[in-house]
Length: 386
Image (cartoon, rainbow, N blue to C red; front, side):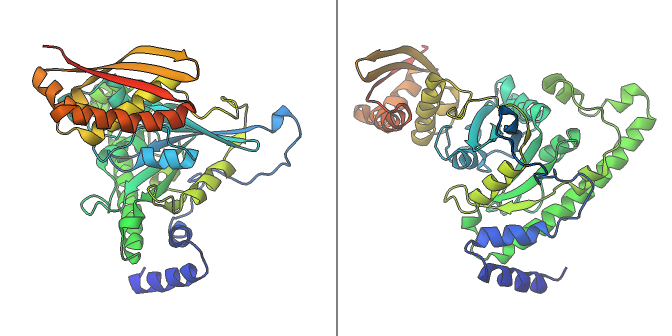
């Protein structure tokens, strides 16, 4: 496809649309090759019945490399800030579930840690949940949203190989592609180039992976399972790795573009996910928005502020511990210990004249009050192991 032709077509779409991201998303979806089950059938064929049977449900995993903006996207889809976000990599270290409900439709979003190689996880001394989280979510998911950072010039033209391996491993789960951070792209025709490059490179990789699988199927069981043996230990059982289905080769049933930071294009994705729900009983009430307790969400808020104010390894190795969680009248009393590995780290967390920990406390207090809907008395006690 000639790029100049692509740009002219997109410009025509943009003139007729209020959202650049929405116009580009609609056009890029037309670039996706149709396949039998590349995307779920999202058309409702039966009228809604006025009984509990009318409830509909979708479990969707959000997958991507670290810092692609997955958690910011999930917060936007939920319409509220529930989970920690920061510019630093590996802010999310475990799976968390967000839920939004509209009418009879409920969507469960499984936000996952960034996909990294096994060796990287070991080097970071990350918890087991960090490595297994993406795989666990796809074992439960009926749908996956693959998030790509469109502003990352080094990696935006093809999916990370670990993401590709994960998609191939769970090739039975329908996937869509989401280009995020499009607000950072000045010339929007670049988004078309990125989309075409990702689709072509993913298709080529999946075809080659299919050939590799066929070769492994001809080998002895020991050799067949040699690749990825360590991943199996940490990720648990997966679908039998036979030949890839045609839908996996085609990879994506739809392409979206958004800025999770500004919210541009997020509503289109939200509407699509709602349309993809299937008949099924809700797993959460209409007023629930997460599987996390209030205490866990509060710890996440404090953790976010630690990542924003502290640098290098300190926010990663610092340990949080909730000591007091009680109500006095209308005020929520919260007392947390922040345990550092050394007195030197503790002094950095405290900051000159206590200013760093005071800033962390003040910012966290504001967000916690918004979350709990009541006054909060927050104390962060910094201490060291040594």
